[in-house]
Length: 296
Length: 284
Image 1 (cartoon, rainbow over the protein chains, first blue to last red):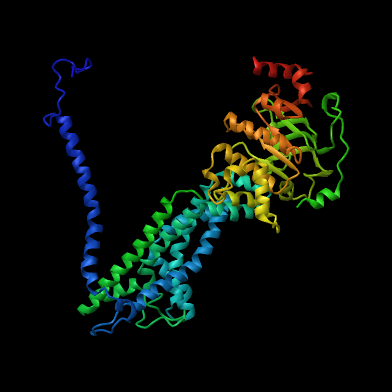
Image 2 (cartoon, chains in turn blue, cyan):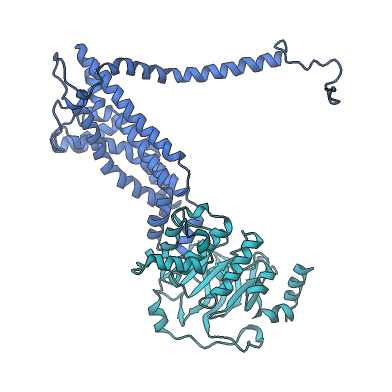
């Protein structure tokens, strides 16, 4: 091939060489960036590895069907804690989703930049950053003290306090992202504001809203602090009484991991694995909803 | 849906058409007696002196340069301007004898009889079927949905293209198809009057031609008012044309009506110098 006429000026070496300080710096920084990215993955991967190795040991169907054993006993499972976590999350959802979603509708569709809207939005942002143990204190004062006992309900209230701001703010963002022309289309058809919101804006924003809900659920399901002095713990199955203490994975891990009995520590590892798996499923679910092509 | 309105008031007699032009022999009754004296946005005077009676079963075009208030006047015909903060109108808009700005009138009820098609196609993020069914559901329509939806889609000349994919997304259609879907959605509830705000400005010439043919068919059944920047379009479809202009003399930008006459007369022999200049400028 003929040498290109636009070749470098005479004397310029066009070959790649690590002797060139700029090339060398480029390579070093690139490697450093890759290395540090991998390093950032290290905690997550090592936690997952330990969970699989230590927690996987006890993995069996009976883990989900049997009650937590007493101190010093062998066997048993964490069935009551798995069920308990699901029930507390369900209570929290029933309490927080209507509240959070309706507040989001108010903020996005009605409040605008009004004083009340600004205040609620600000309060929501402050609440998302609130230490979760304070949610527990709040539920303790509100439910445990007034009802006179630790209870599943108190645990649900504590968790819902954590969920409401997340649900509200993410749902508001999702609703605001709906193009104005769709609102105009509905209003132009003679829809009322609420019909426009419920029939057009909310369905269009649904993927975004669901993502926020799942992230809020994932966060709440993994919280220990708010449950410690609200839902407490129970070695028995949930018997339909919301006024009684209830088991949960998070509190089980907290209680058993510090136990002197090796079997209980193993159960804590298994519970950790299940809890991380649960949270992971919720997070991946949220990701799938986000990535779903916005056809509808 | 609008049965109570249509039985309540027979059509008012046609008043004198603006600027003393001879009314065409075939002029029908006035469906909407629009007499805008002033439209304000806050303290800003957006439009003054726009008297545009809209005749039943005709196509009325609003033309004029940007900022001349033609869209503002169109949107005041079904109270879509209510959503603009500070909107205030002086004058009246009588629809079948009822003042739609009278206290106690529900703007939602007005919009159910007076449909709107927007500049940008704005189908909902749902299936084609549900897009057209939207207005029927709002009105708690109890009849045969499939039949009404087919009728509306046929009316919008879209049926043959979408009949096999009614459950696919309205957003997956091309721009021209989306706009016809919006028209189908609007006519599914059989509105009395259809307002179209530059419905073809986002469409290519072929899609534009289809929408224009559609408008000519629709006027057999409906009445249409259209804002357009395209003078040829006004000439092709409109029975009557209103020419608006901008008055900057008072320092602001206030739109006002120059003349409103049968389309052929307005383009063939404009009475006003501004009209003549505007039409000539665009054709040169």
